[in-house]
Image (cartoon, rainbow, N blue to C red; front, side):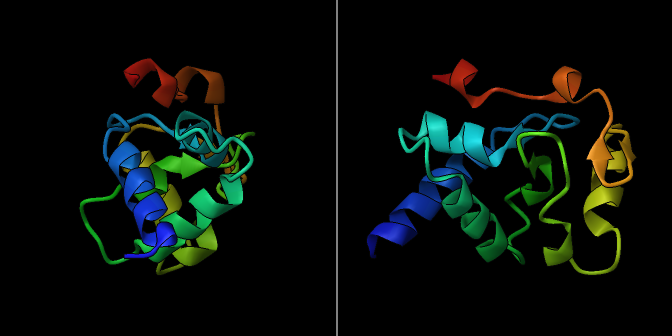
Length: 109
């Protein structure tokens, strides 16, 4: 296992803890892992986990609540549909009331 695999598994461990109906950001996950400047690497991990039903990648968005990873999901609006099925409102590819539905992974440490 190389270091990327280990980092990705650490990302997945946190992503699995995001509560239903909540979202977090790539940067928040990177920060809790002690790699605050590695938000992009968290994004790569989320992209690499497609096909794994145990990881709710749709709950990870950018720091402004934008669905920047949506093009990595099958179909045209799957990421948005998954979020909306959990009660998260999305308008123009952005989470509505982002501060309210944001989950800070630092709260689990």
